[in-house]
Image (cartoon, rainbow, N blue to C red; front, side):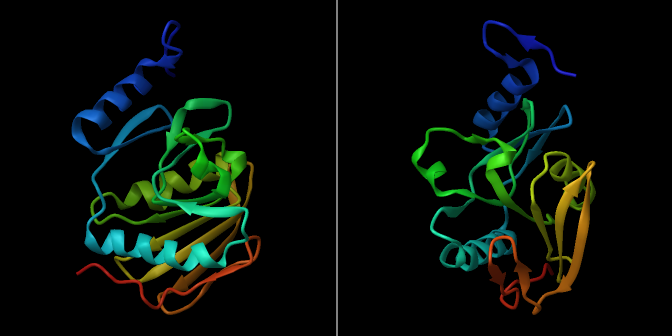
Length: 188
């Protein structure tokens, strides 16, 4: 549980997250009341994010765009938020001064498993994104060259789970897109 500072309108944890992010350059998130800091993605990790963006951008309908530097809040709790590696939302977001999206405005989140913090992406975030009712969560795992597409969030869990290997396309029917994974790299 977080305490609200009335005059600032945000929790102490949120204020600490913003100060830590500014001071360190690391990415801050508050997941279920826990402040988490993530380093800037390394080469292969960043390369996969760029591949995802390059596949999604031209394939999406005109009203949707992928974004890399945006966060999504838990419904009814803007102090609990995640910053996925990439998300897809309304193109108008790129014209706003906001950094935090309502989860109802997000169509897809993508996470690339980090070498050093794999449990966050592979377990904690699956439940978090399902609780936030994000329609689709794509998890790419460069440790073993696999991906998982989670769809249909209901009661804190995704009902649809599709596993695949690098080289197999990821189809996201709700967005009308197909992502090629053949260019994704694996960690050494």
